[in-house]
Amino acid sequence: MFSRSAFQGGVNLPHHKERTAALPIRRLPFADVFTILCSQHTGNPAIPLVRPGQEVERGECIARADGFFSVPMHSPVNGQVQQVGLFPSLSGEMKEGISIKAWPGDPQILAEKKKDDPLQWKAEEIVVRIQGAGMVGLGGAAFPTHVKFAPGEKRIHTLIINGCECEPYLTADHRVMVEMPDRIIDGAAIAIHAAGAERAIIAVEDNKPDAIAALRTALNQAPPGIEVQVLPSRYPQGAEKILLAALLGMELKPGQLPLDLGILVSNVSTLAEIALLVPAGNGLIERVITVSGPGVKQAGNYLVPIGTPLDFLLETVGITDDATEVISGGPMMGLSIARLSTSVTKAISGILVLATGSKEETKPCIRCGACLQACPLHLNPGKMGMLALKDRFLEMAESYHLFDCFECGCCSYVCPSRIPLVQHFRMAKKQLRKKG
Image (cartoon, rainbow, N blue to C red; front, side, top):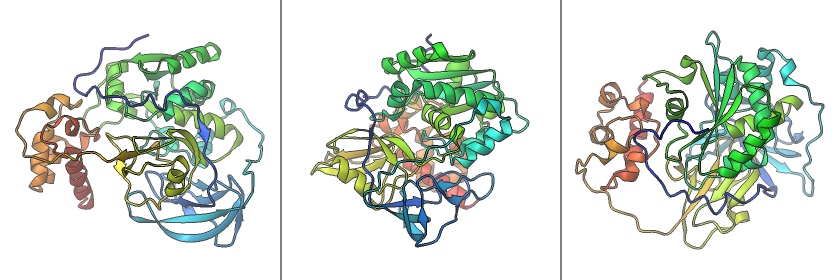
């Protein structure tokens, strides 16, 4: 069934998905050395459990969670620990991590384990097992999944499973829905049981007909209470606030979370991994990543071990001579990668390589109001951008709801003056967080 009409605001973007949407997921070759950062999630970094020279097995826990708002890390390969120290992150900041040299010629087969039925466990046990698996949201935010599944006294009535994937170029979730619909349904059943929810809605944009068909076929064997709803393709349809309004007609007030309204939102790939890992007690050691863009020779969706060096990944897929910039994520909300010597983390859903193009000059704001019309939350991006240039960050937060902005990039996209509004907002938030 189709849901409500498209939301107000947002933009219609060229999808640029045709190059990878029909390509099956392929496994990326294993690198020689892997670097697993201890901070790949929202919350406290994991604490290393290994030392240099120690031999580790694929799937072995190598860093434990530091409290409830943290998740452990697992070795992506059979090998030997080389170093425990500081390594470059995607932002360029040095963070604690563990480097492991893979055994040469090892087939890197994960040992088989007995699988239990999570639907026979208590909710608390599922939460513990999800944390033990090192699960985070695979849509990009990397929020520890088990925290969402432990809402405390809040009652969850609806689980929203986000399969919109509205960012241009990215098709990793799309391929997971096409190739692993049964796993998504199994993960939804586990999530419903853990959260005590009454139903689950899988939201998919209408530009993914093969994914919609695969999920609806899988629903024939699904328990009651799970449904697929099709949404119009419009960016940023996949944002939590937009999904709640489109699917349920509910609006998040400033400062509210979906949990406050009895809603739990999770990404389709996250639930597919829960169904795969939790019954056997395995850890998250690899994920599906879209590698695309005009600067990539062999674009596709790859199953990539966590900790794979980014320069190895790009060398494997090949980049063009005119490649100019590498972005983690999509072109709208992604971040430019500071160092190619960093490694793949759980938060990376895509790698986009841009090629040579004309860079337009930033000009003064002409007060055209295009950003006002494009903002899906009806904020005032133009005014906030002016305040940011004057370092009036507190006024942005108090009077113009800066922290409600989820940095979708619609305002920057439509701005005729090419003002980097989202970058201004990120800078303002960073400064305010530093000041507490």
